[in-house]
Length: 125
Image (cartoon, rainbow, N blue to C red; front, side, top):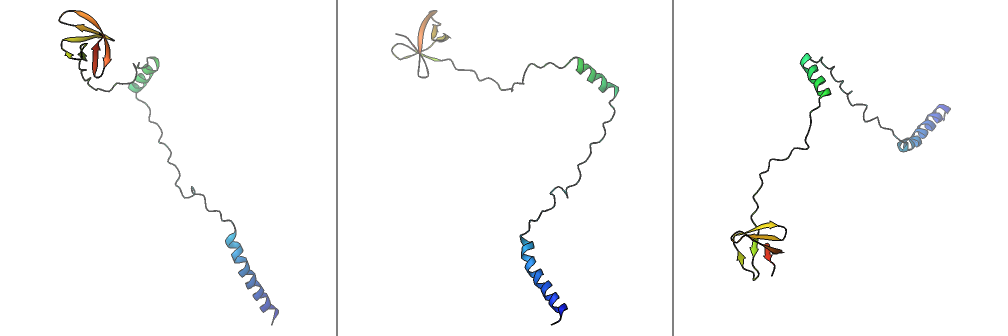
């Protein structure tokens, strides 16, 4: 065999041995932003008209006052008057709640002490 033939076989064998080693070498992928288009630059601002300049100056010296967050336009549902029960548990009509644990008898004008009871209040014995 000639020396050139031996060299070519050695070179081919070296390439065959180097191929698996190259496959295990770390591969760095291209940057993910490399193919991303450049960000658009904002358009230059147009000069403000004299009216806009006056409004800006006025707002700078007299800011708009706020009274807090806006409230939703939800109509209030009228609350039903509490049910008032007598000492022996019967429902009494014509009674109004006068305060916490107080009830007014509208027919006689008398006030009674009451305690919460179920879905209404009960006059104390």
